[in-house]
Length: 516
Ligand code: STR
Image (tube, rainbow, N blue to C red; front, side):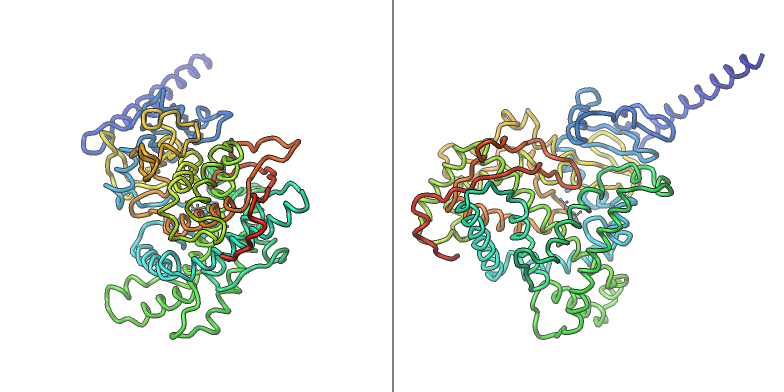
Protein backbone atom coordinates (compact mmCIF):
# COMPACT_ATOMS: atom_id res chain seq x y z
CA UNK A 1 0.00 0.00 0.00
CA UNK A 2 2.75 2.42 1.06
CA UNK A 3 4.68 1.52 -2.05
CA UNK A 4 1.65 2.12 -4.22
CA UNK A 5 1.16 5.55 -2.64
CA UNK A 6 4.83 6.41 -3.15
CA UNK A 7 4.65 5.46 -6.82
CA UNK A 8 1.49 7.55 -7.25
CA UNK A 9 3.05 10.59 -5.59
CA UNK A 10 6.17 10.13 -7.69
CA UNK A 11 4.11 9.95 -10.89
CA UNK A 12 2.00 12.97 -10.01
CA UNK A 13 5.03 15.09 -9.10
CA UNK A 14 6.85 13.92 -12.24
CA UNK A 15 3.90 14.77 -14.46
CA UNK A 16 3.47 18.14 -12.77
CA UNK A 17 7.15 18.97 -13.35
CA UNK A 18 6.91 17.87 -16.97
CA UNK A 19 3.78 19.98 -17.50
CA UNK A 20 5.46 22.96 -15.87
CA UNK A 21 8.50 22.47 -18.06
CA UNK A 22 6.39 22.30 -21.24
CA UNK A 23 4.39 25.34 -20.17
CA UNK A 24 7.54 27.30 -19.49
CA UNK A 25 8.98 26.14 -22.78
CA UNK A 26 5.92 27.31 -24.67
CA UNK A 27 5.55 30.55 -22.77
CA UNK A 28 7.12 33.12 -25.01
CA UNK A 29 7.51 36.78 -25.69
CA UNK A 30 5.69 38.24 -28.75
CA UNK A 31 4.49 34.75 -29.66
CA UNK A 32 8.03 33.53 -30.40
CA UNK A 33 9.51 30.23 -29.26
CA UNK A 34 12.22 30.05 -26.68
CA UNK A 35 15.60 28.75 -27.88
CA UNK A 36 16.18 24.98 -27.61
CA UNK A 37 17.33 24.11 -24.14
CA UNK A 38 19.71 21.66 -22.53
CA UNK A 39 18.02 19.28 -20.08
CA UNK A 40 17.62 20.89 -16.68
CA UNK A 41 16.80 19.55 -13.24
CA UNK A 42 15.33 21.57 -10.40
CA UNK A 43 18.00 23.33 -8.28
CA UNK A 44 21.09 22.14 -10.13
CA UNK A 45 19.88 23.20 -13.57
CA UNK A 46 21.84 21.85 -16.55
CA UNK A 47 24.98 21.13 -14.57
CA UNK A 48 24.93 17.42 -15.44
CA UNK A 49 25.03 18.17 -19.18
CA UNK A 50 27.92 20.57 -18.72
CA UNK A 51 30.38 18.05 -17.33
CA UNK A 52 33.20 18.00 -19.86
CA UNK A 53 36.98 17.77 -20.08
CA UNK A 54 36.88 20.86 -22.31
CA UNK A 55 36.82 24.47 -21.15
CA UNK A 56 33.40 26.18 -21.37
CA UNK A 57 34.00 28.07 -24.64
CA UNK A 58 34.98 24.83 -26.43
CA UNK A 59 32.09 22.88 -24.89
CA UNK A 60 29.60 25.62 -25.84
CA UNK A 61 30.89 25.51 -29.41
CA UNK A 62 30.47 21.73 -29.54
CA UNK A 63 26.96 21.82 -28.09
CA UNK A 64 25.83 23.70 -31.22
CA UNK A 65 25.83 20.41 -33.13
CA UNK A 66 23.07 19.10 -30.92
CA UNK A 67 21.12 22.25 -30.04
CA UNK A 68 21.79 24.71 -32.86
CA UNK A 69 23.69 28.00 -32.87
CA UNK A 70 21.62 29.65 -30.16
CA UNK A 71 20.43 27.58 -27.23
CA UNK A 72 19.65 27.94 -23.58
CA UNK A 73 20.65 26.23 -20.38
CA UNK A 74 20.09 26.65 -16.68
CA UNK A 75 22.96 27.58 -14.38
CA UNK A 76 21.35 26.79 -11.04
CA UNK A 77 18.19 28.85 -11.22
CA UNK A 78 19.49 31.28 -13.84
CA UNK A 79 18.43 30.94 -17.43
CA UNK A 80 21.36 31.52 -19.78
CA UNK A 81 21.31 31.82 -23.55
CA UNK A 82 24.48 30.95 -25.43
CA UNK A 83 25.01 32.73 -28.75
CA UNK A 84 27.49 31.14 -31.16
CA UNK A 85 26.87 32.95 -34.44
CA UNK A 86 27.85 36.45 -35.46
CA UNK A 87 24.42 37.54 -36.71
CA UNK A 88 22.83 36.85 -33.33
CA UNK A 89 25.91 38.21 -31.54
CA UNK A 90 25.59 41.51 -33.39
CA UNK A 91 21.88 41.66 -32.72
CA UNK A 92 22.60 41.37 -28.99
CA UNK A 93 25.60 43.71 -28.89
CA UNK A 94 24.63 46.32 -31.46
CA UNK A 95 21.07 46.28 -32.80
CA UNK A 96 19.55 45.63 -29.37
CA UNK A 97 22.62 46.80 -27.48
CA UNK A 98 20.73 48.81 -24.86
CA UNK A 99 18.26 46.02 -24.11
CA UNK A 100 21.11 43.56 -23.54
CA UNK A 101 23.48 46.00 -21.81
CA UNK A 102 22.67 44.64 -18.34
CA UNK A 103 25.12 42.67 -16.23
CA UNK A 104 24.17 39.89 -13.83
CA UNK A 105 25.41 40.40 -10.29
CA UNK A 106 27.58 37.60 -9.02
CA UNK A 107 29.28 36.90 -5.73
CA UNK A 108 32.83 37.20 -7.09
CA UNK A 109 32.36 40.33 -9.20
CA UNK A 110 30.55 42.01 -6.30
CA UNK A 111 33.62 41.43 -4.14
CA UNK A 112 35.92 42.78 -6.84
CA UNK A 113 33.88 45.86 -7.68
CA UNK A 114 32.14 46.82 -4.41
CA UNK A 115 28.78 45.62 -5.73
CA UNK A 116 29.18 46.65 -9.34
CA UNK A 117 30.47 50.20 -8.95
CA UNK A 118 32.85 49.81 -11.89
CA UNK A 119 32.22 49.93 -15.62
CA UNK A 120 33.07 46.44 -16.86
CA UNK A 121 30.90 44.51 -14.38
CA UNK A 122 28.52 47.29 -13.30
CA UNK A 123 24.89 47.07 -14.40
CA UNK A 124 23.47 49.48 -17.00
CA UNK A 125 22.06 52.70 -15.48
CA UNK A 126 22.24 56.45 -15.95
CA UNK A 127 25.12 56.60 -13.45
CA UNK A 128 26.90 53.89 -15.42
CA UNK A 129 26.42 55.79 -18.70
CA UNK A 130 27.74 59.02 -17.22
CA UNK A 131 30.62 57.21 -15.59
CA UNK A 132 31.60 55.53 -18.85
CA UNK A 133 31.39 58.84 -20.69
CA UNK A 134 33.90 60.55 -18.41
CA UNK A 135 36.27 57.57 -18.53
CA UNK A 136 36.04 57.54 -22.31
CA UNK A 137 36.86 61.25 -22.41
CA UNK A 138 39.79 60.87 -20.03
CA UNK A 139 41.16 57.90 -21.99
CA UNK A 140 40.92 59.85 -25.24
CA UNK A 141 42.83 62.72 -23.69
CA UNK A 142 45.60 60.63 -22.13
CA UNK A 143 45.47 57.48 -24.19
CA UNK A 144 45.31 57.05 -27.91
CA UNK A 145 45.03 60.74 -28.69
CA UNK A 146 48.26 61.88 -27.11
CA UNK A 147 51.79 61.76 -28.40
CA UNK A 148 52.92 61.41 -24.78
CA UNK A 149 51.61 57.88 -24.53
CA UNK A 150 53.59 56.81 -27.59
CA UNK A 151 56.74 58.06 -25.90
CA UNK A 152 55.87 56.16 -22.74
CA UNK A 153 55.20 52.91 -24.62
CA UNK A 154 58.41 53.30 -26.64
CA UNK A 155 60.46 53.91 -23.52
CA UNK A 156 59.01 50.78 -21.93
CA UNK A 157 59.65 48.77 -25.11
CA UNK A 158 63.22 50.00 -25.04
CA UNK A 159 63.76 49.01 -21.43
CA UNK A 160 62.15 45.62 -22.12
CA UNK A 161 64.60 45.08 -24.98
CA UNK A 162 67.57 45.96 -22.76
CA UNK A 163 66.48 43.26 -20.34
CA UNK A 164 66.11 40.78 -23.20
CA UNK A 165 69.63 41.72 -24.31
CA UNK A 166 71.03 40.95 -20.87
CA UNK A 167 69.22 37.63 -20.82
CA UNK A 168 70.48 36.67 -24.27
CA UNK A 169 74.05 37.65 -23.34
CA UNK A 170 73.90 35.32 -20.36
CA UNK A 171 72.47 32.58 -22.58
CA UNK A 172 69.60 31.98 -20.19
CA UNK A 173 66.20 30.76 -21.30
CA UNK A 174 63.75 33.38 -20.14
CA UNK A 175 60.14 33.37 -18.96
CA UNK A 176 59.02 36.56 -20.69
CA UNK A 177 55.83 36.82 -18.69
CA UNK A 178 56.97 38.99 -15.75
CA UNK A 179 58.95 41.27 -18.06
CA UNK A 180 56.07 41.76 -20.48
CA UNK A 181 53.71 42.34 -17.59
CA UNK A 182 56.01 44.90 -16.00
CA UNK A 183 56.31 46.80 -19.28
CA UNK A 184 52.53 46.85 -19.78
CA UNK A 185 51.94 47.71 -16.12
CA UNK A 186 54.27 50.67 -16.35
CA UNK A 187 52.37 52.03 -19.34
CA UNK A 188 49.13 51.87 -17.35
CA UNK A 189 50.86 53.30 -14.25
CA UNK A 190 52.14 56.23 -16.27
CA UNK A 191 48.72 56.75 -17.80
CA UNK A 192 46.73 56.45 -14.56
CA UNK A 193 49.10 57.66 -11.85
CA UNK A 194 52.03 59.30 -13.59
CA UNK A 195 54.36 56.75 -11.96
CA UNK A 196 56.29 53.59 -12.84
CA UNK A 197 57.99 50.55 -11.32
CA UNK A 198 61.64 49.55 -11.44
CA UNK A 199 62.64 45.89 -11.69
CA UNK A 200 62.29 44.07 -8.40
CA UNK A 201 60.11 46.76 -6.78
CA UNK A 202 58.25 44.93 -3.98
CA UNK A 203 55.01 46.78 -4.75
CA UNK A 204 55.24 45.55 -8.33
CA UNK A 205 55.81 41.98 -7.18
CA UNK A 206 52.77 42.28 -4.91
CA UNK A 207 50.74 43.50 -7.85
CA UNK A 208 51.75 40.62 -10.07
CA UNK A 209 50.54 38.10 -7.54
CA UNK A 210 47.31 39.83 -6.52
CA UNK A 211 46.35 40.30 -10.14
CA UNK A 212 46.92 36.61 -10.90
CA UNK A 213 44.90 35.73 -7.79
CA UNK A 214 42.00 37.80 -9.09
CA UNK A 215 42.18 36.33 -12.60
CA UNK A 216 42.19 32.84 -11.08
CA UNK A 217 39.08 33.38 -8.99
CA UNK A 218 36.78 36.01 -10.47
CA UNK A 219 33.87 35.58 -12.90
CA UNK A 220 34.76 32.15 -14.24
CA UNK A 221 31.40 30.54 -13.62
CA UNK A 222 32.64 29.13 -10.37
CA UNK A 223 30.07 27.33 -8.27
CA UNK A 224 29.51 30.21 -5.82
CA UNK A 225 28.49 32.42 -8.72
CA UNK A 226 25.92 29.80 -9.74
CA UNK A 227 24.79 28.94 -6.22
CA UNK A 228 25.36 32.02 -4.05
CA UNK A 229 24.25 30.17 -0.92
CA UNK A 230 27.51 28.17 -1.11
CA UNK A 231 29.18 31.25 0.40
CA UNK A 232 28.17 30.02 3.83
CA UNK A 233 30.78 27.26 3.51
CA UNK A 234 34.50 27.95 3.78
CA UNK A 235 35.74 28.55 0.27
CA UNK A 236 39.44 28.82 -0.54
CA UNK A 237 38.84 30.69 -3.80
CA UNK A 238 36.69 33.35 -2.18
CA UNK A 239 39.22 33.72 0.59
CA UNK A 240 42.00 34.24 -1.96
CA UNK A 241 39.87 36.69 -3.94
CA UNK A 242 39.06 38.79 -0.84
CA UNK A 243 42.72 38.83 0.13
CA UNK A 244 43.89 39.88 -3.35
CA UNK A 245 41.18 42.52 -3.66
CA UNK A 246 42.23 43.86 -0.24
CA UNK A 247 45.84 44.31 -1.40
CA UNK A 248 44.73 45.90 -4.66
CA UNK A 249 42.31 48.28 -2.96
CA UNK A 250 44.98 49.48 -0.56
CA UNK A 251 47.29 50.21 -3.46
CA UNK A 252 44.59 52.08 -5.37
CA UNK A 253 43.50 53.97 -2.26
CA UNK A 254 47.06 55.24 -1.66
CA UNK A 255 47.24 56.63 -5.18
CA UNK A 256 43.76 58.09 -4.89
CA UNK A 257 44.56 59.84 -1.61
CA UNK A 258 47.80 61.25 -3.02
CA UNK A 259 46.02 62.56 -6.10
CA UNK A 260 43.25 64.13 -4.08
CA UNK A 261 45.74 65.78 -1.73
CA UNK A 262 47.65 67.60 -4.46
CA UNK A 263 44.88 67.98 -6.98
CA UNK A 264 44.76 71.23 -8.90
CA UNK A 265 42.15 72.40 -11.40
CA UNK A 266 44.90 73.71 -13.65
CA UNK A 267 47.19 70.74 -14.20
CA UNK A 268 46.13 67.31 -15.28
CA UNK A 269 49.01 64.95 -14.83
CA UNK A 270 47.21 61.71 -15.60
CA UNK A 271 43.96 59.87 -16.04
CA UNK A 272 43.11 59.91 -12.35
CA UNK A 273 43.41 63.72 -12.30
CA UNK A 274 41.13 63.85 -15.35
CA UNK A 275 38.56 61.62 -13.63
CA UNK A 276 38.68 63.69 -10.44
CA UNK A 277 38.17 66.83 -12.44
CA UNK A 278 35.20 65.40 -14.37
CA UNK A 279 33.62 64.25 -11.13
CA UNK A 280 34.10 67.65 -9.48
CA UNK A 281 32.82 69.60 -12.42
CA UNK A 282 29.76 67.34 -12.60
CA UNK A 283 29.12 67.96 -8.92
CA UNK A 284 29.42 71.72 -9.35
CA UNK A 285 27.28 71.75 -12.44
CA UNK A 286 23.76 73.02 -11.89
CA UNK A 287 22.27 71.50 -14.98
CA UNK A 288 19.49 69.21 -13.82
CA UNK A 289 20.35 66.41 -16.18
CA UNK A 290 24.02 66.16 -15.34
CA UNK A 291 23.66 66.57 -11.61
CA UNK A 292 20.98 63.88 -11.61
CA UNK A 293 23.36 61.67 -13.52
CA UNK A 294 26.24 62.31 -11.23
CA UNK A 295 24.29 61.13 -8.21
CA UNK A 296 26.05 58.03 -7.02
CA UNK A 297 29.36 58.77 -8.69
CA UNK A 298 31.15 58.26 -5.42
CA UNK A 299 34.83 57.92 -4.58
CA UNK A 300 34.19 54.17 -4.72
CA UNK A 301 33.08 54.48 -8.33
CA UNK A 302 36.26 56.22 -9.42
CA UNK A 303 38.40 53.83 -7.43
CA UNK A 304 36.72 50.77 -8.91
CA UNK A 305 37.02 52.19 -12.39
CA UNK A 306 40.71 52.84 -12.00
CA UNK A 307 40.87 49.22 -10.81
CA UNK A 308 39.16 48.15 -14.06
CA UNK A 309 41.47 50.19 -16.24
CA UNK A 310 44.42 48.78 -14.39
CA UNK A 311 43.27 45.18 -14.41
CA UNK A 312 42.06 45.28 -18.00
CA UNK A 313 45.07 47.24 -19.22
CA UNK A 314 47.55 44.86 -17.66
CA UNK A 315 45.96 41.41 -17.93
CA UNK A 316 44.63 41.69 -21.46
CA UNK A 317 47.61 43.27 -23.22
CA UNK A 318 50.20 41.11 -21.47
CA UNK A 319 48.15 38.00 -22.28
CA UNK A 320 47.96 38.89 -25.98
CA UNK A 321 51.71 39.55 -26.06
CA UNK A 322 52.35 36.14 -24.51
CA UNK A 323 50.09 34.46 -27.08
CA UNK A 324 51.80 36.39 -29.87
CA UNK A 325 55.26 35.24 -28.76
CA UNK A 326 54.04 31.64 -28.36
CA UNK A 327 52.65 31.64 -31.92
CA UNK A 328 55.76 33.32 -33.34
CA UNK A 329 57.84 30.52 -31.85
CA UNK A 330 55.53 27.91 -33.36
CA UNK A 331 55.53 29.64 -36.76
CA UNK A 332 59.10 30.88 -37.42
CA UNK A 333 58.21 31.68 -41.04
CA UNK A 334 55.70 34.29 -39.77
CA UNK A 335 58.40 35.76 -37.55
CA UNK A 336 60.81 35.96 -40.48
CA UNK A 337 58.20 37.63 -42.65
CA UNK A 338 57.61 40.35 -40.02
CA UNK A 339 61.36 40.87 -39.64
CA UNK A 340 61.84 41.24 -43.40
CA UNK A 341 59.05 43.79 -43.46
CA UNK A 342 60.67 45.65 -40.56
CA UNK A 343 64.10 45.54 -42.25
CA UNK A 344 62.83 47.05 -45.48
CA UNK A 345 60.36 49.58 -44.07
CA UNK A 346 62.08 50.70 -40.85
CA UNK A 347 65.65 49.43 -41.05
CA UNK A 348 67.99 49.12 -38.12
CA UNK A 349 68.91 52.76 -37.61
CA UNK A 350 65.84 53.77 -35.69
CA UNK A 351 63.13 52.22 -33.57
CA UNK A 352 59.67 51.62 -35.08
CA UNK A 353 57.07 54.24 -34.28
CA UNK A 354 53.33 54.51 -34.60
CA UNK A 355 53.56 56.28 -37.93
CA UNK A 356 55.09 53.06 -39.35
CA UNK A 357 51.86 51.18 -38.79
CA UNK A 358 50.59 51.86 -42.29
CA UNK A 359 53.73 50.43 -43.86
CA UNK A 360 53.89 47.24 -41.78
CA UNK A 361 50.70 45.43 -42.84
CA UNK A 362 52.06 41.93 -42.18
CA UNK A 363 52.75 42.75 -38.53
CA UNK A 364 49.29 44.27 -38.19
CA UNK A 365 47.78 41.17 -39.82
CA UNK A 366 49.68 38.99 -37.35
CA UNK A 367 48.27 40.95 -34.40
CA UNK A 368 44.76 40.54 -35.83
CA UNK A 369 45.31 36.81 -36.27
CA UNK A 370 46.53 36.40 -32.67
CA UNK A 371 43.40 38.20 -31.44
CA UNK A 372 41.27 35.89 -33.61
CA UNK A 373 42.81 32.55 -32.77
CA UNK A 374 43.16 33.17 -29.02
CA UNK A 375 40.63 35.86 -28.07
CA UNK A 376 41.46 37.41 -24.68
CA UNK A 377 37.96 36.88 -23.34
CA UNK A 378 36.46 33.93 -25.27
CA UNK A 379 33.04 34.37 -23.62
CA UNK A 380 33.28 38.15 -23.05
CA UNK A 381 31.52 39.14 -19.81
CA UNK A 382 27.92 37.84 -19.58
CA UNK A 383 25.15 40.25 -20.61
CA UNK A 384 21.64 40.39 -19.18
CA UNK A 385 18.33 41.26 -20.87
CA UNK A 386 16.89 44.37 -19.23
CA UNK A 387 13.43 43.75 -20.70
CA UNK A 388 11.56 41.05 -22.62
CA UNK A 389 13.03 40.85 -26.08
CA UNK A 390 14.15 38.46 -28.79
CA UNK A 391 17.27 37.13 -30.50
CA UNK A 392 16.56 36.11 -34.10
CA UNK A 393 13.31 34.16 -33.97
CA UNK A 394 13.70 33.25 -30.32
CA UNK A 395 12.04 34.99 -27.44
CA UNK A 396 14.14 36.14 -24.48
CA UNK A 397 12.66 36.97 -21.13
CA UNK A 398 13.80 39.88 -18.99
CA UNK A 399 16.58 38.86 -16.62
CA UNK A 400 17.94 36.13 -18.92
CA UNK A 401 21.73 36.04 -19.07
CA UNK A 402 23.24 36.08 -22.53
CA UNK A 403 26.72 34.73 -23.19
CA UNK A 404 28.30 35.53 -26.55
CA UNK A 405 30.72 32.76 -27.42
CA UNK A 406 33.43 34.72 -29.21
CA UNK A 407 35.41 31.50 -29.52
CA UNK A 408 32.67 30.09 -31.81
CA UNK A 409 32.65 33.29 -33.86
CA UNK A 410 36.42 33.23 -34.33
CA UNK A 411 36.58 29.50 -35.05
CA UNK A 412 33.49 29.19 -37.27
CA UNK A 413 34.46 26.82 -40.11
CA UNK A 414 31.97 28.51 -42.45
CA UNK A 415 33.66 31.86 -41.93
CA UNK A 416 37.32 30.95 -41.55
CA UNK A 417 39.20 28.45 -43.70
CA UNK A 418 40.98 26.04 -41.41
CA UNK A 419 40.28 28.11 -38.26
CA UNK A 420 42.86 26.37 -36.06
CA UNK A 421 45.65 27.31 -38.49
CA UNK A 422 47.61 30.43 -37.55
CA UNK A 423 47.65 32.36 -40.81
CA UNK A 424 48.12 36.16 -40.72
CA UNK A 425 47.73 36.14 -44.52
CA UNK A 426 43.96 35.81 -44.13
CA UNK A 427 43.89 39.45 -42.99
CA UNK A 428 45.70 40.69 -46.12
CA UNK A 429 44.41 41.42 -49.61
CA UNK A 430 45.50 39.16 -52.45
CA UNK A 431 48.58 41.30 -53.18
CA UNK A 432 49.58 41.17 -49.52
CA UNK A 433 49.78 44.94 -49.40
CA UNK A 434 46.61 46.02 -47.61
CA UNK A 435 44.71 44.90 -44.51
CA UNK A 436 41.25 43.40 -44.68
CA UNK A 437 38.74 41.90 -42.27
CA UNK A 438 37.75 38.80 -44.28
CA UNK A 439 34.70 37.86 -42.21
CA UNK A 440 31.93 39.55 -40.25
CA UNK A 441 32.58 36.92 -37.58
CA UNK A 442 35.40 38.87 -35.93
CA UNK A 443 34.86 40.91 -32.76
CA UNK A 444 38.07 40.81 -30.66
CA UNK A 445 37.10 43.96 -28.75
CA UNK A 446 33.35 43.35 -28.63
CA UNK A 447 30.92 45.88 -30.08
CA UNK A 448 28.12 48.23 -29.14
CA UNK A 449 27.32 49.95 -25.84
CA UNK A 450 29.94 47.99 -23.93
CA UNK A 451 32.67 47.85 -26.55
CA UNK A 452 36.19 47.76 -25.08
CA UNK A 453 37.33 51.22 -23.96
CA UNK A 454 40.99 50.37 -24.35
CA UNK A 455 40.97 49.14 -27.95
CA UNK A 456 43.10 51.93 -29.40
CA UNK A 457 45.59 51.84 -26.53
CA UNK A 458 45.86 48.05 -26.76
CA UNK A 459 46.50 48.10 -30.51
CA UNK A 460 49.12 50.77 -30.08
CA UNK A 461 50.93 48.81 -27.38
CA UNK A 462 50.79 45.51 -29.26
CA UNK A 463 52.23 47.16 -32.35
CA UNK A 464 55.04 49.04 -30.58
CA UNK A 465 56.10 46.20 -28.28
CA UNK A 466 56.09 43.52 -30.96
CA UNK A 467 57.82 45.66 -33.57
CA UNK A 468 60.55 46.71 -31.14
CA UNK A 469 61.15 43.13 -29.99
CA UNK A 470 61.18 41.62 -33.48
CA UNK A 471 63.37 44.34 -34.92
CA UNK A 472 66.11 43.34 -32.49
CA UNK A 473 65.57 39.70 -31.60
CA UNK A 474 64.64 36.34 -32.99
CA UNK A 475 62.53 34.29 -30.60
CA UNK A 476 63.03 30.54 -30.42
CA UNK A 477 62.37 27.65 -28.11
CA UNK A 478 65.42 26.92 -25.91
CA UNK A 479 67.17 23.60 -26.45
CA UNK A 480 65.65 20.90 -24.29
CA UNK A 481 62.40 22.83 -23.69
CA UNK A 482 59.04 21.93 -25.24
CA UNK A 483 57.25 24.29 -27.62
CA UNK A 484 54.82 26.58 -25.75
CA UNK A 485 51.41 25.01 -25.23
CA UNK A 486 48.72 26.63 -27.36
CA UNK A 487 45.88 25.33 -25.28
CA UNK A 488 45.26 28.07 -22.76
CA UNK A 489 43.85 28.15 -19.27
CA UNK A 490 40.26 29.34 -19.16
CA UNK A 491 39.29 32.14 -16.79
CA UNK A 492 38.08 35.70 -17.09
CA UNK A 493 40.97 35.93 -19.56
CA UNK A 494 42.31 32.97 -21.57
CA UNK A 495 45.95 32.75 -20.50
CA UNK A 496 48.72 30.68 -22.08
CA UNK A 497 50.66 28.29 -19.86
CA UNK A 498 54.15 29.38 -18.77
CA UNK A 499 56.94 28.79 -21.28
CA UNK A 500 60.58 29.74 -21.80
CA UNK A 501 62.09 31.60 -24.71
CA UNK A 502 65.52 32.19 -26.19
CA UNK A 503 66.05 35.74 -27.41
CA UNK A 504 68.86 35.93 -29.98
CA UNK A 505 69.95 39.39 -31.11
CA UNK A 506 69.53 39.78 -34.85
CA UNK A 507 72.68 40.34 -36.95
CA UNK A 508 73.53 44.00 -37.17
CA UNK A 509 71.49 44.98 -34.16
CA UNK A 510 74.35 44.98 -31.65
CA UNK A 511 75.90 47.94 -33.46
CA UNK A 512 72.77 50.06 -33.36
CA UNK A 513 71.48 50.90 -29.96
CA UNK A 514 69.21 53.74 -30.96
CA UNK A 515 66.66 54.57 -28.30
CA UNK A 516 63.02 54.91 -29.33
C1 STR B 1 41.91 41.32 -14.12
C2 STR B 1 42.51 41.21 -12.74
C3 STR B 1 42.35 42.47 -11.96
O1 STR B 1 43.18 42.77 -11.10
C4 STR B 1 41.22 43.29 -12.23
C5 STR B 1 40.32 43.04 -13.27
C6 STR B 1 39.14 43.92 -13.45
C7 STR B 1 38.87 44.26 -14.88
C8 STR B 1 38.83 43.01 -15.76
C9 STR B 1 40.17 42.26 -15.64
C10 STR B 1 40.47 41.84 -14.17
C11 STR B 1 40.20 41.06 -16.59
C12 STR B 1 39.87 41.44 -18.03
C13 STR B 1 38.54 42.18 -18.13
C14 STR B 1 38.63 43.39 -17.23
C15 STR B 1 37.45 44.23 -17.61
C16 STR B 1 37.35 44.06 -19.13
C17 STR B 1 38.29 42.88 -19.49
C18 STR B 1 37.39 41.25 -17.78
C19 STR B 1 39.52 40.75 -13.68
C20 STR B 1 37.72 42.00 -20.56
O2 STR B 1 36.55 42.01 -20.86
C21 STR B 1 38.66 41.12 -21.28
